[in-house]
Length: 314
Image 1: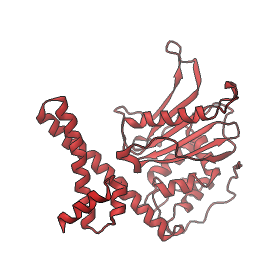
Image 2: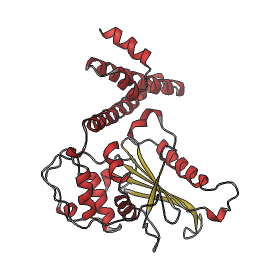
Image 3: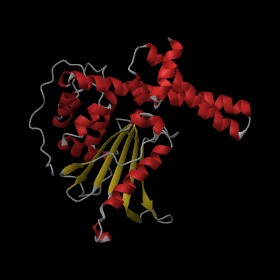
Image 4: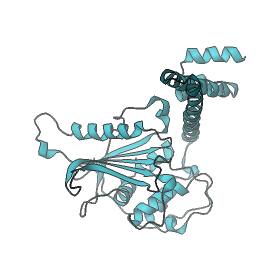
């Protein structure tokens, strides 16, 4: 079913409230996965769409089409939709950067591009696919935060091969004062960066805009059930686990690999580092009384492994 964008007609009357972080799984999907008018505003503001090519309507599509990266499976939030012109948009929010993410997004948009062509269709029916990856991490050493990739002629970059476009945004490096992007894009990125559980004074720029005001209402904690809030907390637990595992694995693996002084030693050291960091976190969660099933989902350890660890610390 296709949804037409309906601009909110009035500002929301926001009462003093506690906000949830819109970068989290449940809030991000509730804002952009259930409200097409907000998704359209966000995509039109952030994506490098051609002149006259703004989105006017979208319909949501199944999102679980890209391969998960085992160590960081919980840090990825995605929304997938198509517009009235047939273009496909894959939006991802992630917290821990890995070089594999570029390949993951490329795989996702490539698969979406190919899946458009049913048997018997002509190639001219293929529509562009855009992959937007909002990264709450820094992965590029330069000051640039907006990274746009597309297929161009090596000698003449003005010659573009249309089809796939990838956009990576480094949210921590986002500069609100930039004039390079549309005003709504700046507002949406500020919203994602600035609103969280610590937010008290909401900027007037947000409350004065009907789209951002609506998003703020959706992000209020009072609008979520106890089960949803539990899911919210578990998501952040999973994010913290993956940050810890990734950091510890890098530190331990580097140290052990350096001591070995061989390529084999470095590889084995990193693997052992991941295992050690994961086990350490699992033990800590067991001591806190967390359900073993939850710990298994966060760490990837089997229930048998967790039962074995639990027996050792009791």
